[in-house]
Image 1 (cartoon, rainbow, N blue to C red):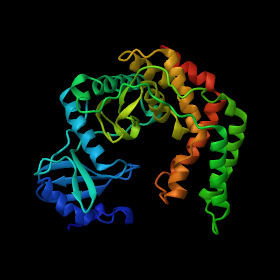
Image 2 (image 1 turned 180 degrees about the vertical axis):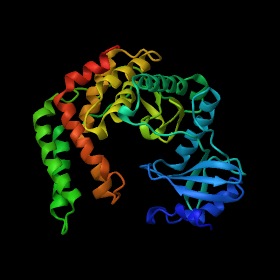
Image 3 (image 1 turned 120 degrees about the horizontal axis):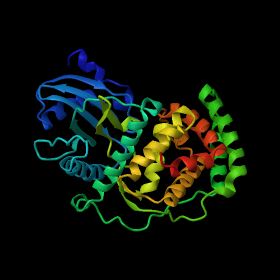
Image 4 (image 1 turned 135 degrees about the vertical axis):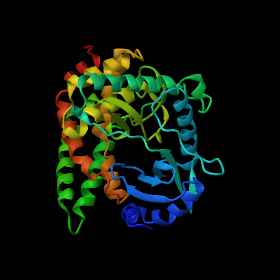
Length: 353
């Protein structure tokens, strides 16, 4: 293995990659693998750039979904490429499979898409609108008859479970107990404990504002599930590609609109850029005319989900996975900001520029 290929090594979580590359190179008929560089931006899966005799490729170790589901999603990806959605077409192995398995580990390979990620206020207002248009096109394309033949029926009304405050309160107490029992707590543990105490205060104050029904409003259909800055590539000011299609499933469209806006224009910054949110939603509604009440319902449901969920702490304490630690405290700051300005946020989703 060349010195450049040692960049494939990325800790014990992916310690098998060097050995797996030999099999993968043969399976996908890549010729000589000249370099393999680990891409640290991925949160749920392992990702590498391969430079090979056949060109550059993005290699993903599939860890976030079962492999049969990954195969289904990759088949959808090929059809989306045919209808003009900016995605990479999955490569097939010599046996015609889009997922290669090595000792039970699944991998997929897609030609490298040139471009960069742009988060938050890095987007101009026009680009924010373009992102909204793209999300609308994805929803329309995924629910086109040509694509839905690859997917199970999914038009049933969506159930949107609502966590009751007592359950969220109990979960906060569970994590506080775990932290209190640590022999050598870290700075992260101390900050998490402080944030959990503050979250309990918010739960007590705003628990009665949670959604009153588990039936979401508005159109429902197949969605990408994670359209945001980590999964959108830009080149020369234009969208060059959308990646990470592991989470395709049926959702209320408004749910993904609200999630994309809050992750892209808020979240890690601790506040929501309202002006870009207005432009983004307007772009989406130019393609999918979703009613304002459905957006309002989706925004409140997402707010409460953030209020009652601790997924980063589940990763950290329950799974021993610290890859998302850096997202927890910014998300707490954003939740506090959002909670104080819920009406203003609703106005941004309802506005037209």
